[in-house]
Image (tube, rainbow, N blue to C red; front, side, top):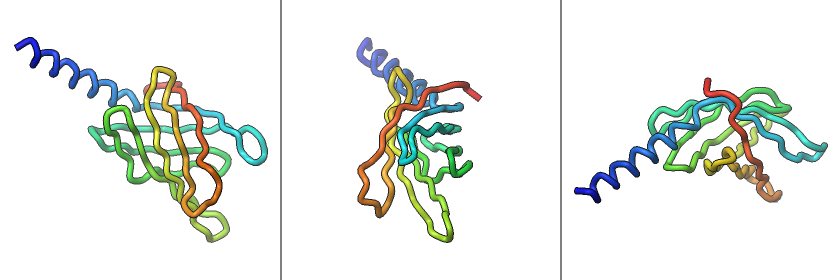
Length: 122
């Protein structure tokens, strides 16, 4: 009986932890032209994640957003001069924020990493 209660408590704690990604997050990351700042707005609904990512290129909707325990992932597709660029974001929720790794599809450049910090729970 105690074991079941412990398992239930752990499951509820994980569900509450995963739901904590809803809100406004800010980050700073090094780019080709120096440091750039951006904002990520996320909304969790069960294991589904929606929202936007904004930066120098403006605000872009995320797609394929998912939450699995403390892992979040989504895709951002931007268009520049008629060319589409797809970036895959994978993040791990930690006590500091969400530690993201961003990979650009079809690029030889290494993945970029940054930590987004929550500024509001919108």
